[in-house]
Image (cartoon, rainbow, N blue to C red):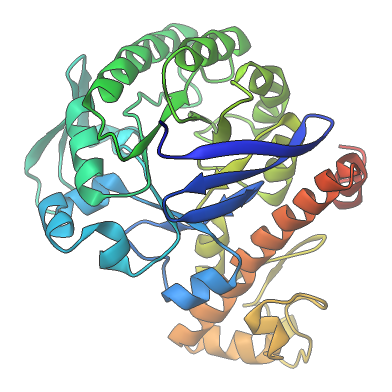
Length: 366
């Protein structure tokens, strides 16, 4: 029996509203997962994260393996106890870090060999080791180890990455802990035929969910937008579909329209820490002098703590310019709530059979 259960409740076109049930609770989809790289969403405490509407958080296997260490986290009760986050927790496999730290990494059939960015020691991450570490971390959902080629990789390199990811998928499933869900990761770059074949191959395996990896890694976003509606229908509709590491509000709604259920991205929190705020119709830069005497909240009608409590743009700009940590908290809260509201609205629209109108209201003529 699967450690997680997903069911679709309603559709509107290809868009789906569903429920993901894990041992840590329900996640209503489509949903966005904040990124908690070091077992914390940067600048926010547990209650602030949950107050944004988040019911799942993704954490970083690579970083937590290096520091504080999988043995340490396990001895302290696993990530739920360690972080005090009572929601669904997901850990990635480390494959994307191998991509992003390519100058430190060698890849072979055995896995990745890389130098720690902390102390330079050489480490080896095989499919079996990735599952062992994620098992020790104790998240609800673990991701298979995959090969993520850059967006400009030639087709031959992408095809080899797909084949190796398939072989590693089998090894990850053989090494899984039975109480932990495992998701497969579909690769293939912007090549629709490679993506479709890989989705079918992984769909034939007993994964608890299926993810789309290898997007937003240097390719033109328009290419991702073109590929998603051609590929997502080939991803088993009985299982949750998760688009990894993406992206802008427009990216999310295009993916929802194609039938994707779950997302994560550093963009809302990273942008907040850089003073860039998401609002309906675009973004604003809180650092701009135009906000020096601005009495407006970040976005009229927003129900996030920052806007609801009346923190004005002038005050937030002052905090940011002064280097006050409170600025990072208040801006991050708003951006995460913006993403959550975007997908809550999408879910409501799907349940009411009007998703296309909802999409057009956000992004006309896309």
